[in-house]
Image 1 (spheres, rainbow, N blue to C red):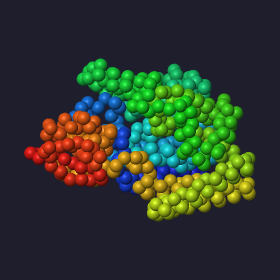
Image 2: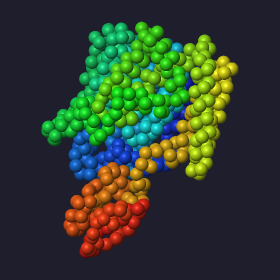
Image 3: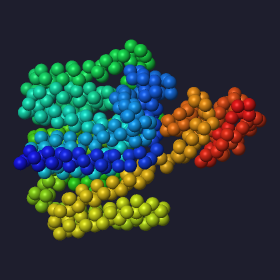
Image 4: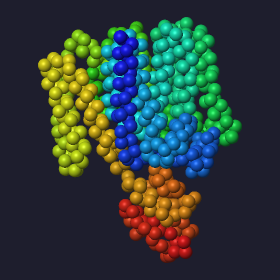
Length: 511
């Protein structure tokens, strides 16, 4: 009976997570930088068949391993080049992290309830869903790491599962490269803390590591043989070690940068995190307690002291936080230990924020987000009232409410809010594609390059200063100029090819 219930829970978690990650997946344009870049690389693989040595605009792409781009290219073969197929591999693999976290929790807690709560918390964490739906590496890296932890815990009962540890390490390397050292260190320290010393002598573990890492080693060897020290400098130095020691491309922040990220997007679940971490400390000699503490402290501590700061670097800490929160919610459900005052106040504040959002989105005429705000206000109000009544049913209300809120958000075209930071690329890309022949470079006055514009225009669009643009205007080059720059540059002979979203595409008249 218990096995049947476990299969039911696993299937249910899989279905509801796939729904949340896949609905309206292609309803918004690709985002800069990662999405546009990976889509460009995958499209070149799809067109050229060059799977071993990926390229970006014809130049070697040495920044990241190719697993994500390979998967996207496969989707292009099956469903064509579009937003949905670009995001599909990462979204599916990230969604699988929900049932995987349940399996990890089931083995670590040795109970179903805290494992279920942890999986549902992870399912309804906004950053996990949002970044996991994008064509980015973090969500699928987390899922491979959760599969690794499952194999590690399952190997206590059956040593053959240790084979999977090595294959998961290989998948992590082929996805995001050097992060394997950090995640591998966490797994190794957990193995020691969990007193699985005998596993270190198991041939299954070492055979798995050998076989699982062979594809990654082969790929790295092929790149080094072809590109030599250039590959080592770009892939290891610039993409890994430099980010530890100095801010890359100005992406810096204070030590508490990621704590602020957690505070911005972690509610309402952060209300239950202090209690969860306290329980983890009390249970630090148990599997789940040591896993939560090691993962949170080592990973969060490492990225906090890195000089380069980017919001999605914090993603792999969310499964550990979800386990802690799930443990606390399970304790509340079973023993009814409520913090009535603080929880009620915070949920009431979130409810008021939902009402404020309702007014704001009404002014902006965004009906889906109006409904989202209403659902948020109602669900948080009901949960606050239930907490005041010391009714444990506030927990399912929170899960259902947050699931509906995030589902409504991703159903709108506002779930990638970074798209509003710059001009919409599609109209400008259509203008370029209609007037510029393939293989021709376009120079723009926009202050930085946008991979998404390159992807949609299918042309290389390079940012240049006004001085450079003046020189290029005499060299028969295509120019994409904003209105202000167009007035500042004196062009003797040119032809206006069209305008789109305050940009004008021009070429010399003899073009």
